[in-house]
Length: 409
Picture 1: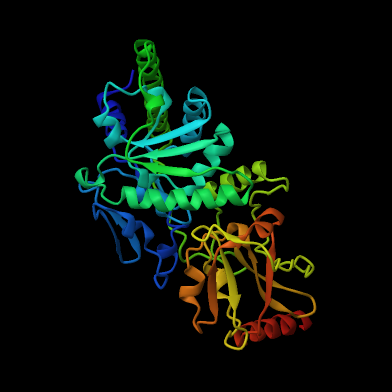
Picture 2 (picture 1 turned 90 degrees about the vertical axis):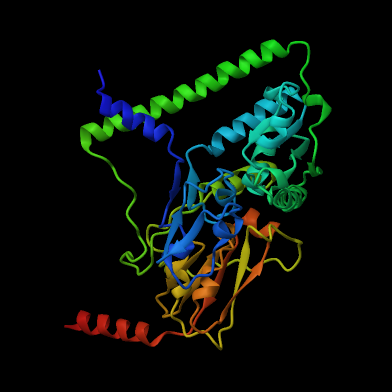
């Protein structure tokens, strides 16, 4: 039987705000010269700030809107109360009850309509600012939705005043992506709930079903936390993930990890498209490929999509010094270095994995690199790899000379 200390530990974890930062993905934590601060800018409560290169979270001021999680371009932020896989499943269940209409509503408007809405037909979120366009596209594909409505309450009275504005931008971005992949539908923002969400005569049964579903989810959370506490008691606390900001691998680049949200988006777009979109595959070799034939010229035609999601790199070769720091600090691995047997060196860009975080542009010492917003559907469908052959940096030449001399000895 667990002791009192173990029960207290379980209770503390259950009621913890669950906010976590993966510094190996955080653009600002990886390089202090990077200008990304989208999480701080999106926080309506002012509970986030950067101090000495680390993101600091004031849980006392946090209103749990989860806007920062949606705003983070690399997926470095997470909350225990935001389960994106569960969100997709809930969207599918609710959409099935409304014959293809997906209704996502904030807690504010649902509180105002308390007792009048069948909660099984609506997907509840803390704030519409917590919903990103990638999640909407994934939910539409998974739920086979034909219409999406984002319903919000009076944002000015709940402290989450920017929810409506961000929801409009999210809806426009999601609509653009869906149109580009052949889905003729509009994601609409409304200040009211659709009439179909009202309770029917079987409201009692629906509420009872919802009650048991909530109890099931709560039981899962309790079981998960209890197991974690039991493992910590047996093996010692696992602690937080160590910072990877200053540790590079043997190829001279920091660890890279593609955002799970991005991989799910590519999978959803692949299901919507006739062309297969493959998920990110980790380049364990650091991208130092001897093959120079992987370059695909970007199509000259096609409308740019996903301007807030993807970006294309352009490098002014006359200004570049060949240091390849852009590839060293890229958090998602969209930029990676290469060299060939013929002596060519440079960087390649996997457009699909670019998070448009701006890190590469911010840290370029000669300001030779520019990010152009958006990508073409052809690039995403076919996994375009853009290659830039760069001038050799003096340090690289010295390193290669040292290696040749050592080999001769």
